[in-house]
Length: 630
Image (cartoon, rainbow, N blue to C red; front, top):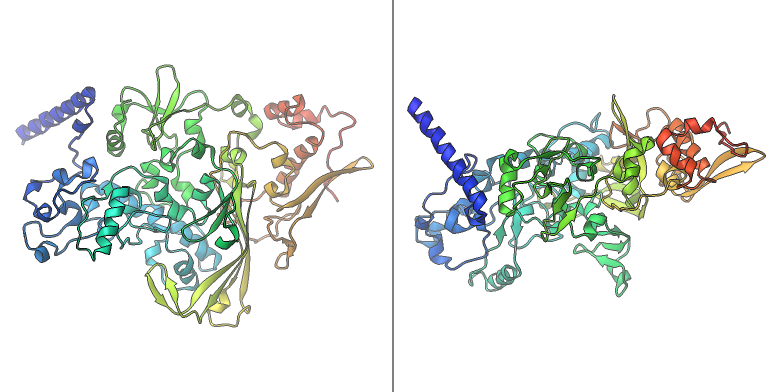
């Protein structure tokens, strides 16, 4: 036993030495190391697959049949030369989570474990909030798995309207990932068809599957924005926001020949607003959201903000970034580094502060300058530290970067949900089958504006983040229970925390927070500071009519300078809320000052450092502060 341990130790030393030797040589073809997480493929020349499927190409370097064979992905009988026998047990489209343990997971067990526990697979938050709003749960923070839901009113609502977007949804058709793609397990991110592979697939299908394609799709780490788009152009519209597009209620025929509009593959019509700064620079989603976030960390989270660890300040740091050396990379990050053929193994790599996972496409040079290597084209991007105003601004230390740096966000209001028991071709998005009876959603308006602000509150801190009208809606629950339409209708006015992904380098001006009704939560309209007879009063005239359910403007979150009634639920999170009346008054106090003092005036700049209270002691006689008692 002792001798065996010595040999194991010497073998490990030898492998490590060989690995670093090839690192120094810089030969990308030699950067393959043995890792106990991954199985060793035996002699692949014994497989019968390539006797028929000869001269195929298109494989990625690390999934080439010469290295791993065909059966490691597709299974089947590799010793038979008979077509029928050799295809027994074969998986034509491997990578779905239903077969991942036998296919992808054999080589990537850790990654599979992470994916199976990730929110993209469980959809726990989606299910939890829906059940909470339907009154089927006491909290939006319970753990669920979308594939385990039943057929309650809420469950059927999810099955009919939401359950398309989860990684467990099976990819059953050949072809590239498109805007219409949903699920597919590992395929959802890692399947890539070249143009030649697409053409040969068309020929194969049109020949009644007789003319075998020579070009195989690649399975690799080159995840494009198209892989994210199918699911993330729904719900909070992160993908469309990122590219600068806002959804409309228009039909395709309405925008024929018109510039500034886009029709998606599902026929939704979008108009151009303004794209995210990172998108204009050619950056992909995965330039920021690495495998550690996208695939998860193996832990089960309820909501996406818990799973996302990356912060703007990780790359746009104050003074110095959090870093780690190359030799501290975990196995997953090391493989990404090798597959991307990066060369900066002699430099420090930025690590996310919250959980210390590395961003392997970043490095810091000897002078302290930070860079990001774009995963789309290898372009080198300077990572600019925080501007001085951010680091010295004491008044906004609890305000998130996206609150100030988001140029717009999508809004959806006037939504009504009712169950049509007579719908003859209702499609269950989870079970992928037709039935009778379906929930239907009727939307009044899509629009956009600067994001509202909400407060993320815990025992120790308060943090201001962007918010959107996530659910201003009515639900006819009685229609599902067999009652007459309108007999049991519940109304909800719920805003949700949101990261708009419409980042701009230009910061929104002070009035857009301190004197903007949409931002504070009153909804769109005119918010004016009126001074009469030496008395200053804020007055608000809403743009939308009052909703008869609660007498607030249709798009509002809270009443104007009035407390929300006790017991009213107005957020999709228990730890996220609108501003209290006192907080509204603090915002509007500064807003009153801004009626005369510009953003760049000496007194307003001083307020960023010292706060507003010390300056109130030095008021000029002509200054009129707001009165709150009328």
